[in-house]
Image (cartoon, rainbow, N blue to C red):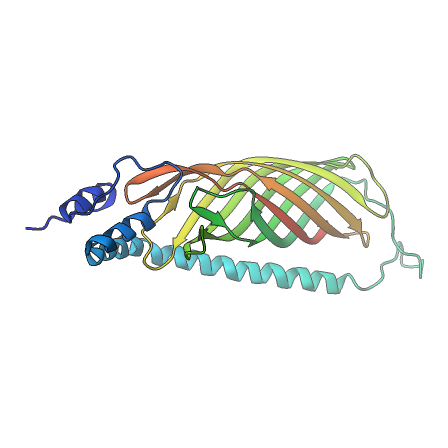
Length: 280
């Protein structure tokens, strides 16, 4: 009588099938590929493959729905940036009677600032010893309140998607999607009419979701603490609109689980962003 034990007891199933495995795998290596290769060498690939597909199917539909939803949001962000840039192509004037006088003054009033940016993301290192992230897409929304010309405080929401490849060109584990929510302080030490540099710091949470490739056992990344340090430049275009570019580093270290095993990962990344800002 064959007893199938899923979840954290999957090693018991592997023992019943006569497949060798290590009870103490390296903490920085995903076991999924190793177990499938071992099963192939002993003629028990079918049993492990069926188990892997069962595990991978649990919750996959929900994750795929979330991923598609985020892709649609990303498209909306891109179209909004293009629309905003087109809208800013018109010249602006200081007052209704000052025809031909461009607005160049930097606002010193207390007011809200909304930012929408898109760009790329790259991991600063391998997530684990056998998994390496590729260049991915990123987006960022930000709402800040300007208390004075040099200090702003508000909320930043970053989103990113990266493929996690198996090292050595042997395919990929799947795609990691991260949403980071962080209260943020922005400091603007120098005010000019042409380019305004700034530095921002944020602390919050990374919400990680992993969508495994077909045939790869379910791989989960836990949610982690987020620390974000960024530097950027605002280029005032009108009294309300600014062109914005930013480079941000964000901490994302936690624990992965797969087939009952667990270990540490490091998904810390650097984001390169470009977009627009609007002062209400």
